[in-house]
Every structure is written in C-alpha cells, then in structure tokens.
Image (cartoon, rainbow, N blue to C red; front, top):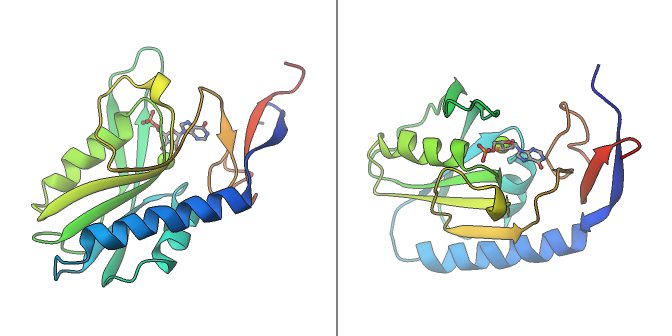
Length: 180
Ligand code: IMP
Ligand code: MG
C-alpha cells in the first residue's frame, strides 16, 4: 500500500490555473494562427489530461487530438530509459505537433518524447507543460510554453497523481509523507 501523505494548502488555486491556461492558449492561438494546418495536440497520459482538455477549449485553431503514454525510470541509478506504453495512432507527418505535458521534472520524459515524435517528421514539434521544476533538470529540454515554474516539491491535483490518486483535485497541492 502507498505510504500515507498529507496535503499542504493549495500551491496553485483553480482560479490561477484557469487564468494561466487562458493566457497560454491565447499565446498558442497567436503563434499558430497563420499556418493553415491543423495542430496535432499530443496529450501525455495520464497527468496532462485535465490541462489538455481545458487548454483545447480555448483554442480557436483547427486541432486534432491524440494520446500517448510513457513510463520513465529516472531513479538514482537512472539509465535514462523511457518505455512507451501507448504510442500515437494518428499520422503526424507534415503537421504541427504540440506535446502537452503535466510537469517537466528531470526532463527525461519530455526530451525523449520530443525525439520520438520528431521521428514522425512533423512540420514543427513544440512542447507545452503546465508545470516546470527547473531546479530538477538533468536532461536538457526546450519548453515552448510553461504554465508555472515551481520549486522542488512533490505536487498533486489537476491531473497529477500520487500512486494514481488525487488527480481529481481542482487545485494543485504540495504534499509530504505524514509526520514530516
Ligand atoms: P521527468 O523526470 O521530467 O521525466 O518526469 C517524469 C514524470 O514524473 C512526469 O511526467 C510526472 O508524471 C512525474 N512527476 C514528476 N514530478 C512530479 C510531481 O511533483 N508530482 C506528480 N508527478 C510528478
Ligand atoms: Mg507525466
């Protein structure tokens, strides 16, 4: 069973998330306005699902949507290994791919995904992440759009999980093991 954790006060409130998602989508609308192509939104399961849906509702661009799920092993003896659990099923060649992530931590997953999806020969391939923990970076990655930069703390809610739970919380909380 998962070790019990306790939540602190919200780090980012639902209102703050909503406002930032609107700003990010405004920027994306501007940047892709003149391509004349549909944007291929690639949602990284499971954590980015909430963010991706809210973001897409603000886009006034032609979009397509696909999902991908990856597992990363970035422990202390990190081999930098990422395993694909589910790959995209939509053709991406010649399209504008926008990868939607929940959080960039060490950068392992995001840098791997950018390489993997670039292999599909899209016209462009960009990354939007709701959260970034820059102080944790090991694998360099270019992030095109960032919702919030946060300190090195474990966070959950709004799609982010602890042992698969807590994704449904509307705010983002910091959490710690009980008693710490
Ligand atoms: P990476 O280290 O950048 O490859 O991050 C891998 C994955 O770890 C992210 O996509 C998240 O799913 C997960 N992750 C990293 N930090 C947190 C956190 O604070 N809360 C919940 N999940 C996290
Ligand atoms: Mg993730």
